[in-house]
Length: 239
Image (tube, rainbow, N blue to C red; front, side):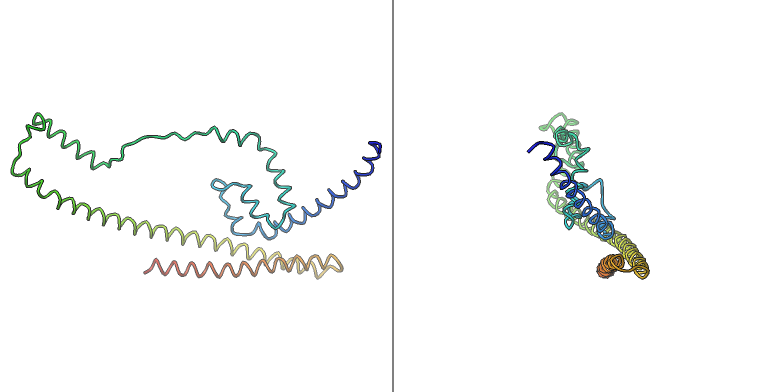
């Protein structure tokens, strides 16, 4: 078969396939914007902490054609990022595992020994012997004091984490509330448009209306869960 005949035979079919796939991608993209992009995860996406491709892949699982198309867009500017990432080297810094109090104490001992001309020249006075005898008691008292400090610090840290968590829950609730209101508004708009249409156009609008309404109900359920979490955490902080 001549090359021109092959082209004339396959090109219309190829064009038709591309047209159909493109139409599917557009439909998926419209659904993605209507539902997935209004989710809490999408609105609170941290670009400095999470990779965009991984995030989009999880969000586009129900839309395989759209994800395939998005992958092609993402690799356009990828360049040599994978190779260059391997050139990053973390510098290791060695440091002694000695706390500040230990360093100060060692310095005091060294200064005292130097002051008397060496270890063998240090006078074993009664005060020194009594101090050595009480060293274990002072050490236990020091450990108890440090334990109480750690407990107090741990409690303060837990409370701070709980307060931060409560604040984050309130922010998430506000976002869900905004999404919920947006879905309800869009659904009402589609319902009004459907009343003025007929035939397939009306059916399409009603289908999209039902889709938004289901999303609205899901967000209301999620909103109720967030309210319970906020109430429980607030009660815990008050106790």
